[in-house]
Image (cartoon, rainbow, N blue to C red; front, side, top):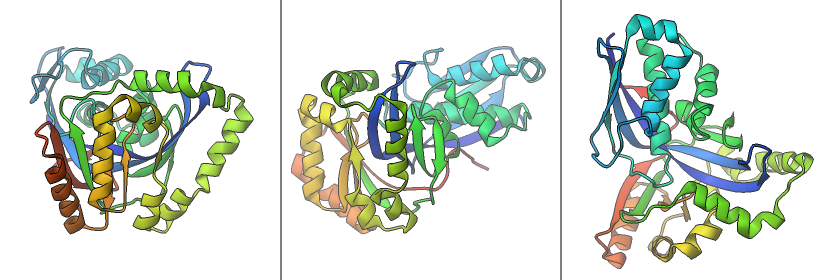
Length: 314
């Protein structure tokens, strides 16, 4: 085939705990990540040149090497020069559905889709672990986005341990269009405010990671219990983002009062989500929150949890 079209699902954090600092300057994390049906689409086709060309449905998104999808193509060309020479450059057409700078790993999902697409287009036959290792060179979220589903992520987020898939759980997403939160700012601010509490010796970090594997949230996921999953949601970054971004804190409060099983900010924000029992409850939560806020700057999405990452669309 000369082209592939791929679906790149977003993700939410069901759990995010910052354990301490790493020698490489990143944070040692333990997270539980979950793919959702809200997804971008990418079409990757051979263009008969030696160039990588990226176009995007959203004019606000750069189409140069500052875009993770572009960098993913560059990484594949660098790592597989013979395949690049044989098959040539590619055109990547990106249709954005995942909001940008939202804490939903949209850019990471796009990069993962490019890795999977070029593996297919160039007939490389890479295994999932090999794709994940490549993905880790680009960003901490990208290895998870390759396979998706439900997983515990440790290290800086690149070390994955799969959990039973949590599929078909409905949720409401909400985000202010005008608000963006820098992920580096969120982590740096957390370090400034809470660094004294860090577990900076390796044994303590490893022990805490093991505790998460036996936590209430993992137990709830193993037993597919939506109520218990919602009760165990946790995100350390709320401690710095919500005081700094009052509208996001207010949005979280409104969604909490609107119903559902549980509400939390995803990642570094500013997207807030509420887990719901079914589609009807999700629609009701969205309607109540939208009416309460009456704010045209806030977008809402109804979506579901899914058990997959990058998918080829026939």
